[in-house]
Length: 505
Image (cartoon, rainbow, N blue to C red; front, side):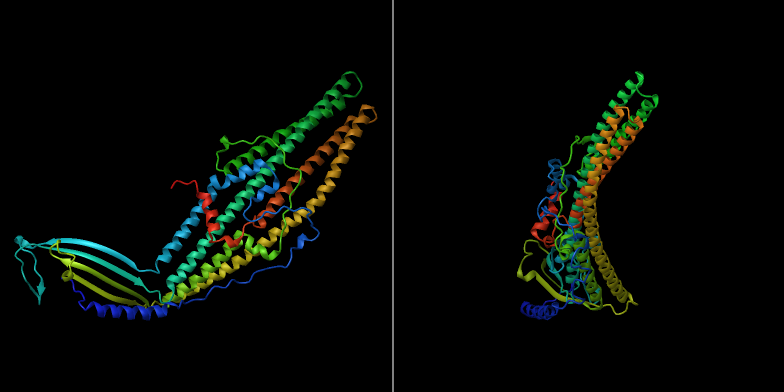
Protein backbone atom coordinates (compact mmCIF):
# COMPACT_ATOMS: atom_id res chain seq x y z
CA UNK A 1 0.00 0.00 0.00
CA UNK A 2 1.07 3.62 -0.64
CA UNK A 3 2.53 5.50 2.28
CA UNK A 4 0.74 8.87 2.66
CA UNK A 5 0.73 11.73 5.18
CA UNK A 6 -2.36 11.79 7.39
CA UNK A 7 -1.93 15.02 9.35
CA UNK A 8 -4.84 17.32 10.04
CA UNK A 9 -5.70 19.57 7.11
CA UNK A 10 -5.40 22.75 9.20
CA UNK A 11 -1.81 21.94 10.16
CA UNK A 12 -0.92 21.25 6.54
CA UNK A 13 -2.45 24.50 5.42
CA UNK A 14 -0.45 26.48 7.99
CA UNK A 15 2.79 24.72 6.99
CA UNK A 16 2.17 25.34 3.32
CA UNK A 17 1.37 29.02 3.96
CA UNK A 18 4.62 29.49 5.91
CA UNK A 19 6.62 27.83 3.12
CA UNK A 20 4.96 29.95 0.47
CA UNK A 21 5.49 33.18 2.39
CA UNK A 22 9.16 32.44 2.97
CA UNK A 23 9.68 31.47 -0.66
CA UNK A 24 7.80 34.42 -2.13
CA UNK A 25 9.87 36.79 0.01
CA UNK A 26 12.90 35.55 -1.92
CA UNK A 27 11.26 35.57 -5.34
CA UNK A 28 11.96 39.29 -5.81
CA UNK A 29 15.63 38.42 -6.27
CA UNK A 30 16.74 37.67 -9.84
CA UNK A 31 20.44 37.01 -10.20
CA UNK A 32 22.45 38.35 -13.13
CA UNK A 33 22.96 41.84 -14.57
CA UNK A 34 19.98 44.03 -15.41
CA UNK A 35 19.98 45.19 -19.03
CA UNK A 36 21.11 48.66 -20.03
CA UNK A 37 21.55 49.49 -23.70
CA UNK A 38 25.28 49.87 -24.48
CA UNK A 39 26.44 53.03 -26.20
CA UNK A 40 26.94 53.12 -29.97
CA UNK A 41 28.00 55.61 -32.63
CA UNK A 42 25.61 58.55 -32.75
CA UNK A 43 26.83 61.47 -34.90
CA UNK A 44 25.17 64.87 -34.62
CA UNK A 45 24.69 65.32 -38.36
CA UNK A 46 24.90 63.57 -41.69
CA UNK A 47 28.06 64.77 -43.42
CA UNK A 48 26.82 64.16 -46.96
CA UNK A 49 23.55 66.02 -46.34
CA UNK A 50 25.33 69.38 -46.42
CA UNK A 51 24.53 71.30 -49.56
CA UNK A 52 21.68 68.92 -50.34
CA UNK A 53 18.52 70.97 -49.93
CA UNK A 54 15.38 69.34 -51.37
CA UNK A 55 12.73 71.97 -52.06
CA UNK A 56 9.69 69.72 -51.66
CA UNK A 57 10.67 66.49 -49.96
CA UNK A 58 8.11 63.69 -49.80
CA UNK A 59 8.06 62.00 -46.44
CA UNK A 60 7.92 58.21 -46.07
CA UNK A 61 6.01 58.54 -42.81
CA UNK A 62 5.46 55.72 -40.36
CA UNK A 63 2.33 53.76 -41.16
CA UNK A 64 2.20 54.89 -44.80
CA UNK A 65 3.15 53.22 -48.05
CA UNK A 66 6.56 54.76 -48.61
CA UNK A 67 6.69 53.76 -52.26
CA UNK A 68 3.78 56.11 -52.97
CA UNK A 69 6.35 58.93 -53.25
CA UNK A 70 7.10 57.61 -56.76
CA UNK A 71 3.51 58.29 -57.90
CA UNK A 72 3.26 55.09 -59.95
CA UNK A 73 -0.01 53.19 -59.70
CA UNK A 74 1.47 49.95 -61.08
CA UNK A 75 4.22 50.01 -58.45
CA UNK A 76 1.57 50.63 -55.78
CA UNK A 77 -0.36 47.51 -56.79
CA UNK A 78 2.75 45.36 -56.94
CA UNK A 79 3.98 46.48 -53.51
CA UNK A 80 0.66 45.60 -51.92
CA UNK A 81 1.13 41.99 -53.01
CA UNK A 82 4.38 41.61 -51.07
CA UNK A 83 2.64 40.88 -47.74
CA UNK A 84 0.15 38.54 -49.36
CA UNK A 85 2.31 36.30 -51.50
CA UNK A 86 6.04 36.73 -50.84
CA UNK A 87 7.29 33.38 -49.52
CA UNK A 88 10.49 34.72 -47.96
CA UNK A 89 8.38 37.11 -45.93
CA UNK A 90 6.03 34.31 -44.90
CA UNK A 91 9.02 32.33 -43.65
CA UNK A 92 10.12 35.31 -41.52
CA UNK A 93 6.58 35.66 -40.17
CA UNK A 94 6.54 31.97 -39.22
CA UNK A 95 9.88 32.42 -37.40
CA UNK A 96 8.37 35.31 -35.47
CA UNK A 97 5.37 33.20 -34.44
CA UNK A 98 7.75 30.49 -33.22
CA UNK A 99 9.61 33.05 -31.12
CA UNK A 100 6.42 34.39 -29.54
CA UNK A 101 5.29 30.85 -28.77
CA UNK A 102 8.60 30.15 -27.00
CA UNK A 103 8.11 33.27 -24.90
CA UNK A 104 4.61 32.09 -23.94
CA UNK A 105 6.00 28.68 -22.98
CA UNK A 106 8.61 30.28 -20.74
CA UNK A 107 6.01 32.56 -19.12
CA UNK A 108 3.92 29.52 -18.19
CA UNK A 109 6.79 28.34 -15.99
CA UNK A 110 5.94 31.04 -13.44
CA UNK A 111 2.74 29.25 -12.47
CA UNK A 112 2.02 25.88 -10.86
CA UNK A 113 1.49 22.80 -12.96
CA UNK A 114 -1.81 21.18 -12.03
CA UNK A 115 -2.91 17.72 -13.09
CA UNK A 116 -5.52 15.08 -12.40
CA UNK A 117 -5.52 11.32 -12.84
CA UNK A 118 -7.97 8.47 -12.33
CA UNK A 119 -6.97 4.83 -12.05
CA UNK A 120 -8.76 1.52 -11.58
CA UNK A 121 -6.90 -1.68 -10.62
CA UNK A 122 -8.05 -5.28 -10.05
CA UNK A 123 -5.41 -7.58 -8.58
CA UNK A 124 -5.19 -11.21 -7.52
CA UNK A 125 -2.69 -13.98 -6.78
CA UNK A 126 -2.05 -17.57 -7.93
CA UNK A 127 -4.89 -20.08 -7.72
CA UNK A 128 -7.50 -17.36 -7.66
CA UNK A 129 -6.08 -15.92 -4.45
CA UNK A 130 -5.22 -12.23 -4.33
CA UNK A 131 -1.84 -11.09 -3.13
CA UNK A 132 -2.24 -9.68 0.31
CA UNK A 133 -0.53 -6.79 2.05
CA UNK A 134 2.94 -7.21 3.46
CA UNK A 135 3.14 -6.69 7.20
CA UNK A 136 6.39 -7.29 9.06
CA UNK A 137 7.76 -9.42 6.24
CA UNK A 138 4.74 -11.77 6.20
CA UNK A 139 2.33 -11.86 3.27
CA UNK A 140 -1.26 -11.98 4.40
CA UNK A 141 -3.27 -13.88 1.78
CA UNK A 142 -6.62 -12.60 0.56
CA UNK A 143 -9.46 -14.90 -0.24
CA UNK A 144 -10.67 -13.05 -3.35
CA UNK A 145 -9.27 -10.64 -5.98
CA UNK A 146 -9.45 -7.00 -4.92
CA UNK A 147 -10.37 -3.77 -6.68
CA UNK A 148 -8.78 -0.37 -6.11
CA UNK A 149 -10.06 2.90 -7.51
CA UNK A 150 -8.21 6.18 -7.19
CA UNK A 151 -8.94 9.81 -8.13
CA UNK A 152 -5.91 12.05 -7.65
CA UNK A 153 -5.16 15.74 -8.14
CA UNK A 154 -1.52 16.92 -8.24
CA UNK A 155 0.24 20.27 -8.25
CA UNK A 156 3.88 21.30 -8.59
CA UNK A 157 5.40 24.77 -8.49
CA UNK A 158 8.94 25.87 -9.16
CA UNK A 159 9.24 28.99 -6.98
CA UNK A 160 11.97 30.55 -9.15
CA UNK A 161 13.69 32.06 -6.11
CA UNK A 162 16.79 33.12 -8.03
CA UNK A 163 15.02 34.29 -11.18
CA UNK A 164 16.00 31.57 -13.65
CA UNK A 165 12.51 31.42 -15.12
CA UNK A 166 12.11 35.20 -15.11
CA UNK A 167 15.45 35.69 -16.86
CA UNK A 168 14.44 33.03 -19.38
CA UNK A 169 11.19 34.89 -20.02
CA UNK A 170 13.12 38.15 -20.36
CA UNK A 171 15.43 36.52 -22.91
CA UNK A 172 12.63 34.87 -24.88
CA UNK A 173 10.54 38.05 -25.01
CA UNK A 174 13.53 40.03 -26.25
CA UNK A 175 14.23 37.31 -28.83
CA UNK A 176 10.60 37.47 -30.00
CA UNK A 177 10.91 41.24 -30.35
CA UNK A 178 14.13 40.77 -32.32
CA UNK A 179 12.30 38.32 -34.58
CA UNK A 180 9.53 40.89 -35.07
CA UNK A 181 12.17 43.43 -36.10
CA UNK A 182 13.69 40.85 -38.45
CA UNK A 183 10.27 40.44 -40.05
CA UNK A 184 10.01 44.20 -40.53
CA UNK A 185 13.52 44.23 -42.04
CA UNK A 186 12.62 41.38 -44.40
CA UNK A 187 9.45 43.22 -45.44
CA UNK A 188 11.36 46.44 -46.07
CA UNK A 189 14.05 44.59 -48.02
CA UNK A 190 11.46 42.88 -50.23
CA UNK A 191 9.65 46.17 -50.82
CA UNK A 192 12.88 47.99 -51.67
CA UNK A 193 14.05 45.19 -53.97
CA UNK A 194 10.72 45.24 -55.77
CA UNK A 195 10.86 49.02 -56.20
CA UNK A 196 14.44 48.86 -57.45
CA UNK A 197 13.66 46.06 -59.91
CA UNK A 198 10.57 47.89 -61.13
CA UNK A 199 12.54 51.10 -61.71
CA UNK A 200 15.22 49.24 -63.64
CA UNK A 201 12.56 47.49 -65.73
CA UNK A 202 10.97 50.82 -66.62
CA UNK A 203 14.36 52.28 -67.54
CA UNK A 204 14.85 49.22 -69.76
CA UNK A 205 11.51 50.12 -71.39
CA UNK A 206 12.81 53.63 -72.03
CA UNK A 207 16.06 52.25 -73.42
CA UNK A 208 14.02 50.07 -75.77
CA UNK A 209 12.09 53.14 -76.88
CA UNK A 210 15.33 55.04 -77.43
CA UNK A 211 16.91 52.21 -79.39
CA UNK A 212 13.75 51.58 -81.40
CA UNK A 213 13.68 55.25 -82.34
CA UNK A 214 17.38 55.11 -83.16
CA UNK A 215 16.95 52.01 -85.32
CA UNK A 216 14.13 53.73 -87.21
CA UNK A 217 16.32 56.79 -87.77
CA UNK A 218 19.31 54.72 -88.85
CA UNK A 219 17.08 52.75 -91.24
CA UNK A 220 15.90 55.95 -92.92
CA UNK A 221 19.49 57.20 -93.13
CA UNK A 222 20.59 53.93 -94.71
CA UNK A 223 17.80 54.13 -97.29
CA UNK A 224 18.73 57.72 -98.15
CA UNK A 225 22.40 56.84 -98.42
CA UNK A 226 21.70 53.81 -100.61
CA UNK A 227 19.46 55.87 -102.89
CA UNK A 228 22.11 58.54 -103.16
CA UNK A 229 24.71 55.90 -103.95
CA UNK A 230 22.54 54.40 -106.70
CA UNK A 231 22.15 57.77 -108.42
CA UNK A 232 25.85 58.49 -108.00
CA UNK A 233 25.57 61.31 -105.47
CA UNK A 234 27.70 59.64 -102.78
CA UNK A 235 30.42 57.05 -102.77
CA UNK A 236 29.82 53.43 -101.84
CA UNK A 237 31.72 53.95 -98.55
CA UNK A 238 28.81 55.96 -97.17
CA UNK A 239 26.32 53.15 -97.75
CA UNK A 240 28.71 50.57 -96.34
CA UNK A 241 29.28 52.70 -93.22
CA UNK A 242 25.55 53.07 -92.57
CA UNK A 243 24.89 49.31 -92.56
CA UNK A 244 27.01 48.30 -89.52
CA UNK A 245 25.73 51.36 -87.65
CA UNK A 246 22.16 50.12 -88.09
CA UNK A 247 23.13 46.55 -87.20
CA UNK A 248 24.79 47.69 -84.00
CA UNK A 249 21.69 49.57 -82.87
CA UNK A 250 19.48 46.58 -83.70
CA UNK A 251 21.78 44.30 -81.67
CA UNK A 252 21.53 46.60 -78.64
CA UNK A 253 17.74 46.66 -78.98
CA UNK A 254 17.61 42.86 -78.93
CA UNK A 255 20.02 42.61 -75.98
CA UNK A 256 17.97 44.93 -73.78
CA UNK A 257 15.18 42.36 -73.97
CA UNK A 258 17.26 40.00 -71.82
CA UNK A 259 17.56 42.59 -69.05
CA UNK A 260 13.87 43.35 -69.14
CA UNK A 261 12.82 39.70 -69.06
CA UNK A 262 15.11 38.96 -66.11
CA UNK A 263 13.74 41.89 -64.12
CA UNK A 264 10.15 40.91 -64.92
CA UNK A 265 10.82 37.38 -63.66
CA UNK A 266 12.38 38.74 -60.46
CA UNK A 267 9.32 40.90 -59.80
CA UNK A 268 7.05 37.89 -60.34
CA UNK A 269 8.90 35.87 -57.69
CA UNK A 270 8.84 38.80 -55.23
CA UNK A 271 5.05 38.91 -55.38
CA UNK A 272 4.78 35.11 -55.20
CA UNK A 273 3.82 34.31 -58.77
CA UNK A 274 5.41 31.99 -61.35
CA UNK A 275 7.15 34.07 -64.04
CA UNK A 276 5.04 32.32 -66.69
CA UNK A 277 1.87 33.81 -65.15
CA UNK A 278 3.10 37.38 -64.88
CA UNK A 279 3.88 40.15 -67.34
CA UNK A 280 4.16 43.93 -67.32
CA UNK A 281 3.38 45.92 -70.45
CA UNK A 282 5.98 48.58 -71.37
CA UNK A 283 5.53 51.99 -69.73
CA UNK A 284 7.55 54.98 -68.53
CA UNK A 285 8.28 56.37 -65.08
CA UNK A 286 7.49 59.80 -63.72
CA UNK A 287 10.08 62.38 -64.66
CA UNK A 288 11.03 63.52 -61.13
CA UNK A 289 13.23 61.81 -58.57
CA UNK A 290 11.66 62.06 -55.07
CA UNK A 291 13.90 63.01 -52.18
CA UNK A 292 13.23 61.77 -48.65
CA UNK A 293 14.06 63.95 -45.60
CA UNK A 294 16.77 62.34 -43.52
CA UNK A 295 15.85 63.73 -40.10
CA UNK A 296 18.35 63.81 -37.27
CA UNK A 297 20.93 60.98 -37.15
CA UNK A 298 19.91 59.91 -33.63
CA UNK A 299 16.46 58.90 -34.88
CA UNK A 300 18.06 56.34 -37.19
CA UNK A 301 18.52 53.96 -34.26
CA UNK A 302 14.74 53.81 -33.82
CA UNK A 303 13.80 53.83 -37.50
CA UNK A 304 15.82 50.88 -38.75
CA UNK A 305 14.45 47.41 -37.96
CA UNK A 306 17.85 45.74 -38.28
CA UNK A 307 19.29 48.08 -35.63
CA UNK A 308 16.31 47.41 -33.36
CA UNK A 309 16.70 43.67 -33.89
CA UNK A 310 20.39 43.81 -32.98
CA UNK A 311 19.54 45.79 -29.83
CA UNK A 312 16.91 43.25 -28.75
CA UNK A 313 19.41 40.43 -29.23
CA UNK A 314 21.69 42.21 -26.77
CA UNK A 315 18.85 42.23 -24.22
CA UNK A 316 18.19 38.53 -24.81
CA UNK A 317 21.88 37.63 -24.41
CA UNK A 318 22.13 39.75 -21.24
CA UNK A 319 19.23 37.82 -19.66
CA UNK A 320 20.95 34.54 -20.48
CA UNK A 321 23.82 35.57 -18.19
CA UNK A 322 21.32 35.54 -15.31
CA UNK A 323 20.05 32.13 -16.39
CA UNK A 324 23.62 30.79 -16.29
CA UNK A 325 24.36 32.37 -12.89
CA UNK A 326 21.17 30.94 -11.37
CA UNK A 327 22.65 27.44 -11.76
CA UNK A 328 24.90 28.23 -8.76
CA UNK A 329 21.88 28.36 -6.42
CA UNK A 330 19.49 25.66 -5.20
CA UNK A 331 16.19 25.11 -6.97
CA UNK A 332 13.09 24.81 -4.71
CA UNK A 333 9.97 23.06 -5.96
CA UNK A 334 6.77 22.67 -3.95
CA UNK A 335 4.44 19.80 -4.69
CA UNK A 336 1.18 18.48 -3.34
CA UNK A 337 -1.55 16.00 -4.03
CA UNK A 338 -5.09 15.38 -2.87
CA UNK A 339 -7.30 12.48 -3.81
CA UNK A 340 -9.56 9.61 -2.95
CA UNK A 341 -8.94 5.85 -2.89
CA UNK A 342 -11.41 3.01 -2.37
CA UNK A 343 -12.07 -0.59 -3.38
CA UNK A 344 -15.54 0.33 -4.62
CA UNK A 345 -16.20 3.00 -7.18
CA UNK A 346 -19.62 3.98 -5.89
CA UNK A 347 -18.26 5.47 -2.67
CA UNK A 348 -14.95 6.73 -4.03
CA UNK A 349 -15.46 10.47 -3.49
CA UNK A 350 -16.12 10.37 0.22
CA UNK A 351 -14.39 12.07 3.14
CA UNK A 352 -13.37 8.76 4.66
CA UNK A 353 -11.50 7.79 1.48
CA UNK A 354 -9.47 10.97 1.00
CA UNK A 355 -5.72 11.32 1.30
CA UNK A 356 -3.29 14.18 0.73
CA UNK A 357 0.35 15.14 0.86
CA UNK A 358 2.42 18.32 0.60
CA UNK A 359 6.15 18.68 0.35
CA UNK A 360 9.09 20.42 -1.16
CA UNK A 361 12.23 19.43 -2.99
CA UNK A 362 15.50 21.36 -2.84
CA UNK A 363 18.07 20.52 -5.52
CA UNK A 364 21.62 21.83 -5.55
CA UNK A 365 24.67 20.74 -7.51
CA UNK A 366 27.70 20.38 -5.25
CA UNK A 367 30.41 19.52 -7.76
CA UNK A 368 30.37 19.94 -11.54
CA UNK A 369 34.11 20.28 -12.28
CA UNK A 370 33.81 23.80 -13.71
CA UNK A 371 30.72 23.36 -15.87
CA UNK A 372 28.77 26.26 -14.34
CA UNK A 373 31.64 28.79 -14.48
CA UNK A 374 32.16 27.83 -18.11
CA UNK A 375 28.47 28.37 -18.84
CA UNK A 376 28.62 31.84 -17.28
CA UNK A 377 31.73 32.70 -19.30
CA UNK A 378 29.98 31.47 -22.44
CA UNK A 379 26.91 33.62 -21.70
CA UNK A 380 29.04 36.71 -21.08
CA UNK A 381 31.01 36.11 -24.28
CA UNK A 382 27.77 35.68 -26.23
CA UNK A 383 26.55 39.00 -24.84
CA UNK A 384 29.81 40.72 -25.81
CA UNK A 385 29.36 39.34 -29.31
CA UNK A 386 25.87 40.82 -29.60
CA UNK A 387 27.20 44.19 -28.40
CA UNK A 388 29.85 44.17 -31.11
CA UNK A 389 27.25 43.13 -33.71
CA UNK A 390 24.93 45.92 -32.57
CA UNK A 391 27.61 48.59 -32.84
CA UNK A 392 28.65 47.30 -36.26
CA UNK A 393 25.02 47.36 -37.41
CA UNK A 394 24.72 50.97 -36.27
CA UNK A 395 27.91 51.97 -38.09
CA UNK A 396 26.71 50.20 -41.24
CA UNK A 397 23.38 52.01 -41.00
CA UNK A 398 25.05 55.43 -40.89
CA UNK A 399 27.37 54.41 -43.72
CA UNK A 400 24.45 53.39 -45.94
CA UNK A 401 22.64 56.68 -45.33
CA UNK A 402 25.79 58.69 -46.05
CA UNK A 403 26.45 56.62 -49.19
CA UNK A 404 23.00 57.24 -50.65
CA UNK A 405 23.03 60.93 -49.70
CA UNK A 406 26.37 61.32 -51.47
CA UNK A 407 25.11 59.35 -54.47
CA UNK A 408 21.99 61.48 -54.83
CA UNK A 409 23.85 64.74 -54.35
CA UNK A 410 26.57 63.89 -56.86
CA UNK A 411 24.21 62.42 -59.44
CA UNK A 412 22.02 65.52 -59.17
CA UNK A 413 24.95 67.55 -60.47
CA UNK A 414 25.87 64.95 -63.06
CA UNK A 415 22.39 64.74 -64.52
CA UNK A 416 22.30 68.50 -65.12
CA UNK A 417 25.57 68.28 -67.07
CA UNK A 418 24.46 65.19 -68.98
CA UNK A 419 21.13 66.73 -70.00
CA UNK A 420 23.01 69.64 -71.55
CA UNK A 421 25.37 67.18 -73.21
CA UNK A 422 22.45 65.31 -74.79
CA UNK A 423 21.00 68.55 -76.12
CA UNK A 424 24.35 69.48 -77.64
CA UNK A 425 24.78 66.01 -79.17
CA UNK A 426 21.30 66.12 -80.76
CA UNK A 427 22.07 69.54 -82.20
CA UNK A 428 25.37 68.23 -83.57
CA UNK A 429 23.53 65.38 -85.32
CA UNK A 430 21.13 67.83 -87.00
CA UNK A 431 23.93 70.11 -88.15
CA UNK A 432 26.00 67.20 -89.46
CA UNK A 433 23.01 65.78 -91.35
CA UNK A 434 22.38 69.15 -92.96
CA UNK A 435 26.03 69.38 -93.96
CA UNK A 436 25.91 65.85 -95.36
CA UNK A 437 22.80 66.60 -97.38
CA UNK A 438 24.55 69.71 -98.68
CA UNK A 439 27.52 67.58 -99.68
CA UNK A 440 30.02 69.37 -97.46
CA UNK A 441 30.89 66.39 -95.20
CA UNK A 442 31.14 62.64 -95.67
CA UNK A 443 28.59 60.27 -94.16
CA UNK A 444 31.18 59.06 -91.68
CA UNK A 445 30.77 62.40 -89.89
CA UNK A 446 27.04 61.71 -89.56
CA UNK A 447 27.71 58.23 -88.19
CA UNK A 448 30.11 59.62 -85.63
CA UNK A 449 27.68 62.32 -84.50
CA UNK A 450 24.80 59.84 -84.21
CA UNK A 451 26.90 57.36 -82.23
CA UNK A 452 27.91 60.09 -79.81
CA UNK A 453 24.29 61.23 -79.45
CA UNK A 454 23.07 57.67 -78.78
CA UNK A 455 25.78 57.06 -76.19
CA UNK A 456 24.99 60.33 -74.40
CA UNK A 457 21.26 59.53 -74.34
CA UNK A 458 21.95 56.08 -72.90
CA UNK A 459 24.24 57.59 -70.28
CA UNK A 460 21.49 60.01 -69.27
CA UNK A 461 19.07 57.10 -68.83
CA UNK A 462 21.65 55.25 -66.73
CA UNK A 463 22.15 58.29 -64.50
CA UNK A 464 18.41 58.63 -64.08
CA UNK A 465 18.14 54.96 -63.15
CA UNK A 466 20.96 55.31 -60.64
CA UNK A 467 19.27 58.31 -59.02
CA UNK A 468 15.95 56.52 -58.69
CA UNK A 469 17.55 53.36 -57.32
CA UNK A 470 19.60 55.47 -54.89
CA UNK A 471 16.43 57.16 -53.67
CA UNK A 472 14.94 53.71 -52.96
CA UNK A 473 18.12 52.71 -51.15
CA UNK A 474 17.95 55.90 -49.07
CA UNK A 475 14.39 55.13 -48.01
CA UNK A 476 15.51 51.64 -47.03
CA UNK A 477 18.57 52.99 -45.20
CA UNK A 478 16.31 55.34 -43.23
CA UNK A 479 13.99 52.49 -42.22
CA UNK A 480 11.15 53.10 -44.68
CA UNK A 481 9.00 54.87 -42.12
CA UNK A 482 9.24 52.00 -39.62
CA UNK A 483 9.61 52.79 -35.92
CA UNK A 484 11.02 50.62 -33.14
CA UNK A 485 8.29 51.86 -30.79
CA UNK A 486 5.89 49.46 -32.54
CA UNK A 487 7.81 46.36 -31.39
CA UNK A 488 5.67 44.26 -29.08
CA UNK A 489 2.65 46.57 -29.41
CA UNK A 490 -0.75 45.88 -30.92
CA UNK A 491 0.28 47.85 -33.98
CA UNK A 492 3.48 45.83 -34.38
CA UNK A 493 1.67 42.54 -33.89
CA UNK A 494 -0.98 43.48 -36.44
CA UNK A 495 1.71 44.42 -38.95
CA UNK A 496 3.49 41.13 -38.35
CA UNK A 497 0.34 39.04 -38.67
CA UNK A 498 -0.67 40.85 -41.85
CA UNK A 499 1.95 38.80 -43.68
CA UNK A 500 0.31 35.53 -42.75
CA UNK A 501 -3.33 36.55 -42.92
CA UNK A 502 -3.99 34.31 -45.94
CA UNK A 503 -2.46 31.15 -44.48
CA UNK A 504 -4.61 28.09 -43.88
CA UNK A 505 -5.74 27.99 -40.27
